[in-house]
Image 1: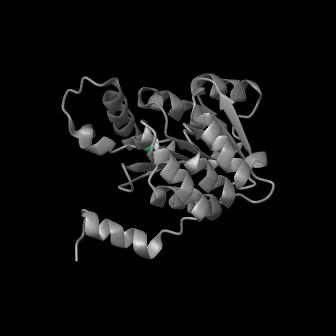
Image 2: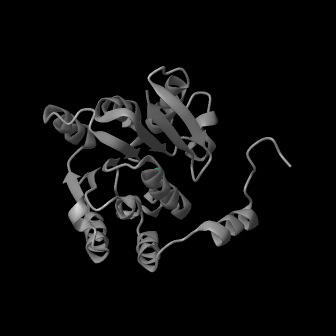
Amino acid sequence: MTARTLNLDDALYQYLLDVSLRETPLLKRLRDETQALPMARWQVAPEQGQFLALLVKLTGARRLLEVGTFTGYSALCMAAALPADGSLVCCDIPGDYNAIALRYWQEAGLAGRIDLCLAPALETLAELERQGRGEQYDLVFIDADKANYPGYLEHALRLLRVGGLAVFDNTLWSGRVLESSPESADTQAIQALNRALKDDARVDLSLLPLGDGLTLCRKR
Ligand code: CA
């Protein structure tokens, strides 16, 4: 037995997937198609997608926001977990991969629940605030350009209701968070976010070593 989080070697990780991953054939097909793209590493791990879906159901979330959608895997997981009157606003920039997301959402019959906004996410989030949508969202999943993570946190805290959840991906950043003076602006931003969240009295906090690190912040 161990009192700290296990290191998952390949065999143990495969076991975790074997006994717990319930990926639909459609999601598997989307993941395989995404794997062939040059930016394939942007895709969430399948067990993360399943965890996000569970979070949606656990929290009873009905209004969701996603920052960084790519080919739409995590959005599809979360949208499928919503009640029939639920909705998801997705932020991403224009790219060839947008069409893949839309195609799979259509095929799943969930496109009607998802609104894909193609613009820099900081602009879309500011626009939602201008439209009076502050404090209206139940859950925000953030998995976009890391340099803007601290900015996304501030928007998320304005757009979430009290008790709502902000979830950040890649907060362990393949271990690069340990670098003492990183040159990468992305690494610096993730380090800054992690340090700031530690003592941020506006949230309850847990950093899960799921995938590349998933930080859960509950708005107080
Ligand atoms: Ca990610």
